[in-house]
Length: 291
Ligand SMILES: Nc1ncnc2c1ncn2[C@@H]1O[C@H](COP(=O)(O)OP(=O)(O)O)[C@@H](O)[C@H]1O
Ligand SMILES: [Mg+2]
View 1 (cartoon, rainbow, N blue to C red):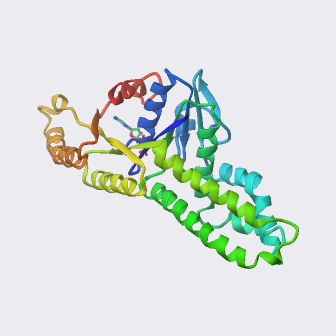
View 2: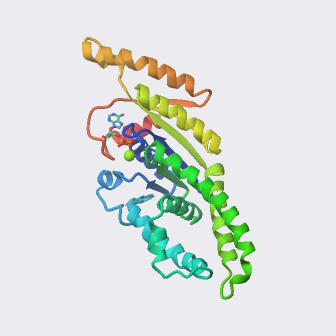
View 3: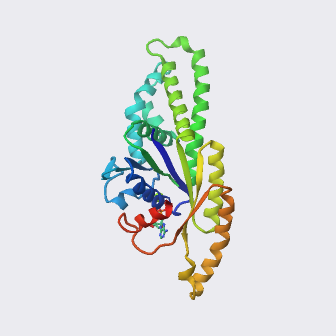
């Protein structure tokens, strides 16, 4: 059974850094896939490959992929477009351009990202999937869209049942039912095989957002492992530097706030580090802080 470990939090706090460090750690123990769903992803940069075009193998046990909107939509077309056309054209006078129209609908790419996650989790190829998510708000939308989609399909099924006699060639109900099951499976994947870390920095907004997102994940039924407070200034290097001392002092209340907000969950800290954030450099070091 493949488990998913996700990293979420405000933009720029260190989600990608933590995800890469964690994926490097897991890859020491088993086949690992690192997926980014951040539209401004940086995995390709970190690993010097084109993970925005296809799954790239970057180490013996580590594959990475950046799910861009373009990649997602072309996969969506391959998998669903024909079915959707079949269902719609069976009771509406529509041409094939309806597919382009639906492709542009809000939420389709989000919806399909989760389908991709499920496909990879069920492929049996990986022991662990590390999911580097888009900044907080987008990821939350993703989860709620999933729920909406599910309730919509339940409604749709009732309506289609009423007009059932207009279908002749195909059985749209069977297709709708397939999509409903898919959505249920995605929700189940998120609620039973996914756990998340919320990343923050010792500043007001990232900390408040982290606490909010952890609560939303609780509401949705995704297990929150805990918080990662990243870029904490070490006291030693601040001593004797008025600017750094002031920064260090300011950070203390936010560390305290997040530690309290953790409410029994794990709370980890990563120091603010100087140097190149490379696979053989600082990322390996960050990996040690996270274990
Ligand atoms: N502990 C750290 N010390 C120093 N720089 C860091 C640390 N963590 C992350 N960074 C740097 O901060 C920037 C943002 O981190 P990133 O992981 O890309 O954030 P996110 O994915 O949340 O947007 C990157 O340039 C990264 O190299
Ligand atoms: Mg990122």
